[in-house]
Amino acid sequence: MDKPRHFTRREFLQTSALGITAGVLGLSFTDSSSDKPYFSLKPIGRTFSLENYYIWCNSPIWGEDGKVHLFYSRWRKEKGMGGWLNGSEICRAEADSPYGEFKHKQVILAPRGGEFWDATTCHNPLITKVEDEYYLFYMGNQNGKTNTKRIGLATSKSLDGDWVRPENPLLLPGKKGSWDDHCTTNPAFIKGNDGKFWLFYKSWNTEEYENQKGPVRGNRKYGLAKADHPSGPYEKIKENPVIDFSLLPGNAQLEDAFIWKQNGKFHIVARDMGFFNHEYGLHLTSRDGLNWSKPEIAYLNMKSYIKEPAAPNHLKRFGRLERPMILMDKDGKTPKFLFGATQGGKFETSTSFVFEITNTGI
Figure 1 (tube, rainbow, N blue to C red):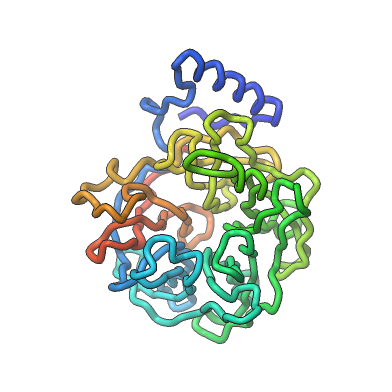
Figure 2: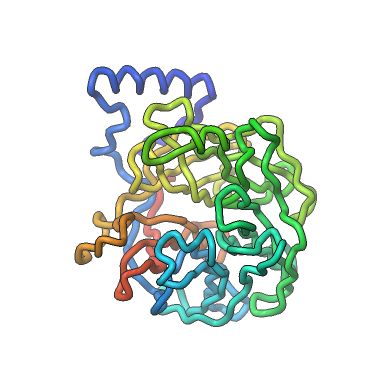
């Protein structure tokens, strides 16, 4: 596979113009029928499901006990798929290996109610360890709606220990009228090549979100904030947004970004929202965290890997893997397993799904 070439904002404009021309002519410059995905994947399966719950946001980490600890979000089945906005909680599960069945162990963070910033939901867990501390980035909201989504951070000395809950969010939206004035959500975290700690976040503009027509309103972009310590304070960089598809046709965008570093490059895997389609994953690379390559396909839709019965009518997003996250090999250098969330399973809700990564396009 050809290595992805990094492209500038000007090239995004040129790509947009090509896309608009293609649309007028009835062509598709993003036709992916002959493209090979970046990840070669072997399905392990739906290794975690819970009766009466939707499971989402599967963030894995190796424990000191040699087990895989899975920080995940869940909400009651009766709330439906939209329950993540007004009733999600973050929990921990364990398995002896990534190939094994996970078992629920404990609730880590639950909505606090009242006037707290995470009063109505706790979602989007991202677990990581820096030195001897565990950091659990997550999203909370205050009113059960998107406009109060804020990224926060809880910390602990152990994966099963007491977690220190923040009184305030870690990262706030931008000023009214800015590209990120609606919320901060979908945290992605890594130590940068400048010695600072980088927090990537998703957001969009409120006016666009409220006034646009179509199945997906607003355009989700990614910004970057930096800090001298994992717990902050974080300062947004002036180059934001660093990933922006808004000049492309069809309101193309992305979400659910996960970042890692390998062979001197930063890599992101994310869910496609219109660059190719709404069922694939995207893969992008960067040398500096600011200028990102043109997206390539990271992984395909679920039916390309497994065969399952047709989903019931209430599962409108059946057949795609969302919230992709990577579990590195124990050496910390090689992507070894792809975790995600997907609708379906024996309880007709959503479950975790795990793939073994057998090869990459590097």
